[in-house]
Image (cartoon, rainbow, N blue to C red; front, side, top):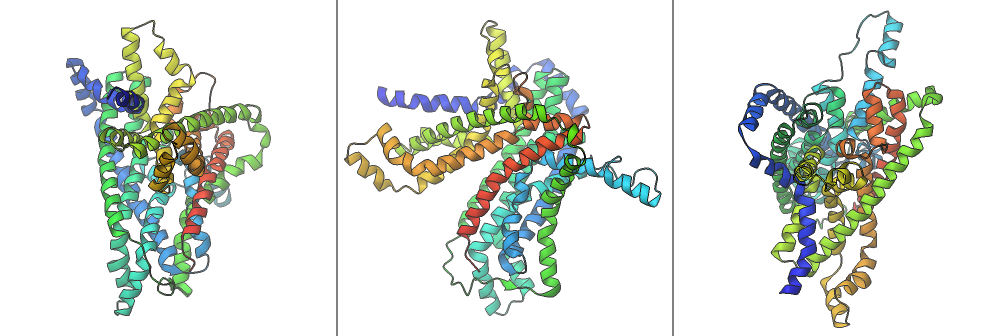
Length: 539
């Protein structure tokens, strides 16, 4: 029994490491007193209605937009055949490489009052004043989020439709149902759980965003948390706002989990013949409509933002901060590499522990670790700094504040809390492909414990570990909220510098680090598209 407790100790320590920010946010309510109640009443009468209204507008606009764009693209490339369909299957994933705040910088630079488009129109047609409405508002942010996040819906809806829809729609056609009825009565119900899960993921990303909301000057819970902590120096208000945001995210996470369970129930192995799975061939106006339905989100979410950012690079290379770019890139690479290695190591330990002893404690720790990606960066920042502040008050000589805020320890900790779940999913997928009989055979030959992991599991998990490390590395490179607050002095990353330059209206200089982030983001998109193409049947 004592040996078992010793083996459980690392798991309990990992659980404490990964869950502490969330626990600290809720524990802040234990300090409830008259001052806390007064702060909450003041926020309820001033800023909370605005935060709630703006968040509601964003959720409604983004939810409806990603559902329409993502489902439309998935239905077009899955159910129909038209010129360019094979290209659109992977090209519709390209906006995943674009951080939403980079898309916001690009559109603002091109469409603002002093941007090239409005300047050209005023000069050409003799116009005065503003030609287009200001993009930096809630609906402009919704536009940015829709074309940055619709691939979440596209991926899940495409998977759901490709597994069963073609076969069932062919059966409906043989029963005499017209095309419109087959789509409404067969394809849409099959895709509904996938669409719900994708919309929930997109809304969680929207609520967790800080870069777009801060740059556009709109009041959301994430920007309110930073304002309460950094501008007002009010930890209690920041913790209360973080709690409210976490509750909303928890509701969305429950919706997403329920939709995923329904999706697993609906989806099944399709053994239909290749003839039955042939998509409907479109011609003329119908083919042009499907082509436009697919190319429009690619243009809005990837092609045009990249072109807008390339414009200042092509106009004047001398204004770009080439001398400092190398330092920013090295800082990003260093943080990404360290976080990726640690995240993969923790994920491997968790996955192996679950494989070796799937008891309630291990399952609980793994489940808690898998929820980290849903926690917004702003909540993680508050959840890390609150206990540090408490510790500093209790033990002023501990130096906890120094290690968390003046070294990379704090920022790497925040990355692990948020991104271990990404590595864990990949490692669990790798373990699912290793039959349990291999473990039994290895134990019969005398390999157990660390030997089993090193000599049997690890050679079979190298590809999964590489994929997990790559995904964590890219996510760390693009992470903005936690990096902005917890980075050490003189350790600016590409994401932080792009945000700061854009905030200072130096959008031309912000193009260089922004494009570097896009290039890094393309790596997992390329790998994902190759995986989907190899897994999909050839029509």
